[in-house]
Image 1: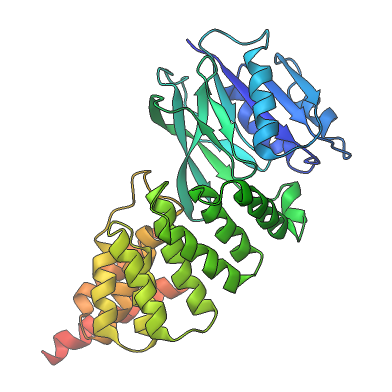
Image 2 (image 1 turned 120 degrees about the vertical axis):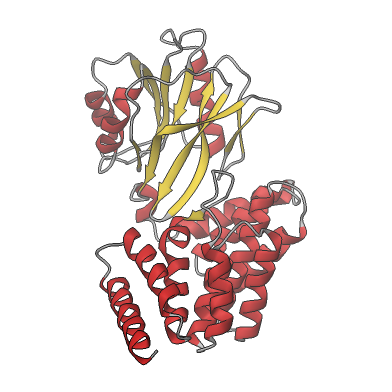
Length: 366
């Protein structure tokens, strides 16, 4: 059976590295980790956490994410610990493996996506690749593994839990630095769709909302690359317009444009339902909410899926608008669906009570 080698780049991750490595160790057979200049003792913690497991810690100067990850990939291919059919597992220090399978999966494809969880956000990420195949890292930041024509699969387990509490999270200028790095890369390749998208994301996270809107517009206009990035660009545009206090009609139009672009994503409809409900336009809100509630959670094909939208938020919007339009029976069903996903949420539990009381009163009146 193919083995699995752990591949990482780290710097000043002493506060999180042990948590990561403890979660990963049962799943891997060997490791190669490059430290790019830690001054907090990360190196010793890596050696301690992985003691007894074959592997090596190397020191490398920092260049950029793609370059340094490629260095580790090349070292792994040359490692004496590597088996002929081994795969490499990539993970960051502020991440953990969860739901480890009882048995090692049979790795027959060239690469495998794992499900990533960050708060309520879900998406699939290519985390396991066969070392014998010609995979390469692309991009200076928001880098990705690339091998045209590679056979790909998905694993239900393990999953990756992201907490974003690593070294980068402590730098208040992280996103501005990211944006500057991406802008430099775009000088060489101005039409790169992935760089265009993540420039917008970085500007948004840096609080430069007007510049982010302009960058999202550039990505929307570029038909190349992954279409889910274009959908996200539309959806994030709508959210930014609302944050900036733009006219509600413009915000709603932007959400509906996102839904038109990808009608199997419920997030824009739930936001539209929320906005219309807040305007006490309950019939219109219910139209959006019902449509959203009927959509299933995307099966790994969506970028940055908001799990809450599908598990309870759509049902919550249905319940509230049903209550205010006198549809108590339908509202009660929806309220119970929402509270089943969040049983400790007092507001959702109160919605059940309100719908029950409304239904009882309507039965008496009837």
